[in-house]
Amino acid sequence: MSRPGGSTAAELLSRAQANLDGQREHALGLLAGDVDRLAALCAARSPGAEAEVYALSSALVDIAGLLSIDPFYEAAYSLCETASHMEAAGTWRWPAVEVHVRALSLILLAPAERSPAAVQLLDGLKAVREHAGRAG
Amino acid sequence: MSTDKINLAQTSVMLVDDQPASLELLASVVQGFGVKEQVKCTSARAAVEALQRRQVDLILVDCIMPEMDGYDFVRWLRREAPNAVRYTPAILILGHAAKSRVEGGRDAGASFILAKPLTPGVLLKRIQWLGTEERAFVDSDVYIGPDRRVRCYGPPPGQDGRRDGDLTGDLGEPVGGNMDQSEIDMMMKPARVSL
Image 1: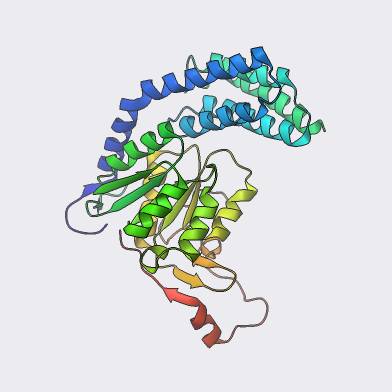
Image 2 (image 1 turned 180 degrees about the vertical axis):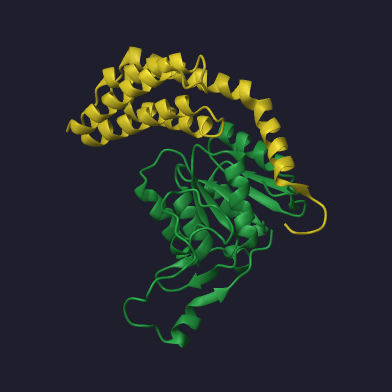
């Protein structure tokens, strides 16, 4: 690491960020696809789909966690928390998932922007998450 | 930000993540750091197979994966991997998981546990820390991995910590009985990370 040559941290970070930016649109498209899949699961409400909801929300967290889109990340994390708790406690409620999916769709329109509307949505998700946490 | 140069042009990095999208995002960050080579694995099993045949300088591994997760992988790395790779620094990357699992990762023998959301700046800082730290490698019956007391030591001298609770390097008064020096020597294997 300390060998001669190399670049400053600022130069390395600039290149890393440029690489990330180059993949951003593609990654946001993947997030949108996963949110659509979650919406389809909510519409179908198929028994046994709980694990798939968690898997999709966990994938959202994995991708969003590298894109500096904190409001979207927080909403996805909230869905992970809610789904994992409801599944473990045997208190699954699809409306709690639907609220998250609608919020994710809206926040995805400006995923990095902590607008008043986004803050309000995240506050709402917090209430849903806490309610799900108390149940069971 | 430091103007010191960082040279990772001779560094091989293994990336392990079952999610292709997040694997590629992480790879693009690491590529930006100018590493020599990336070894991408879409499962911990694939990483285990690769490490039977070759060495790398650094491993970045996702925590949550089917079959063998990141914790089990690091445990394998420290306890069962070929000697040449057992001491490889490994950073566990945490997506959604209970915070209690952070301690699980530390106890598995990870060099660092990084929770998402993760920026290139935080990742580079941790890689820098690994390149400059002099933590001993502990090899005991109950734990194999870097000295876990990093939590008490806090970040390296001159570096700002990330958490409110990061402590300084000043140690407090000892508690409990002292171990015999020969016992300590038996457990510690000084190992300097080379990145």
